[in-house]
Image (cartoon, rainbow, N blue to C red; front, side, top):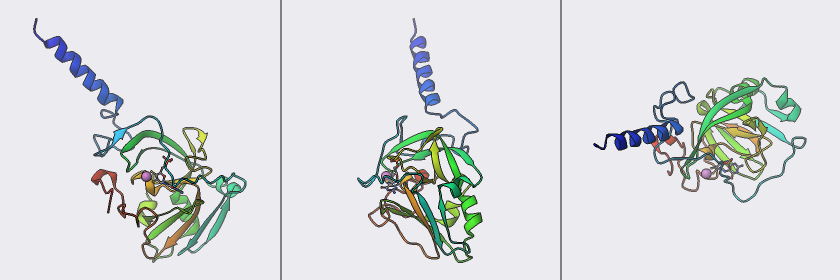
Length: 217
Ligand SMILES: Nc1nc2c(c(=O)[nH]1)N[C@H]1C(S)=C(S)[C@@H](COP(=O)(O)O)O[C@H]1N2
Ligand SMILES: [Mo]
């Protein structure tokens, strides 16, 4: 007897693990990456909670979103105004700088492109500052915020986003580490000069691309 059988078993086990990790999938949200898992990340199927120790309790009825700064049309949306916008749904992977990634999150809400079409940034606008009800802030380049997979999300995998994950509404900016995806979204400030946010002024990278491991700046 050779060890051929044992070798084949091992090969099958490895390929099954790859398949579980989505390596052999095509036509996913991330076709340009043959391997969906960015360097230094591990795949999880749960969804860890990370915050500053405050989880604001904001009901849908109380929730307001202010969009101001360098825009033609500053606005305040309440829940009904948000619901009156076209529905946007997208499936994307999330990557946290604390080294976990979670695949195939189905988000529903309003696209950032729709929000920007309504608010209309002025020609000099370069960045977006996202503010949470907990006082958290994070900065994103306007062109990144305007990518076609970014949204103001109120649902995840068909259920309202829970309080601990940033409900009633959070930002989702999937191409960047998850710290850019502000929870308990309260205000979107459009600015003409960059303004690093909570983690960006505490040692995190200003951009946060998981594929080039822009973790710490
Ligand atoms: N408002 C607010 N948004 C936030 C944070 C926060 O503390 N407050 N933490 C950020 C960080 S560091 C991460 S990793 C993700 C965590 O999101 P999750 O708890 O849904 O996994 O939210 C981001 N958005
Ligand atoms: Mo984080």
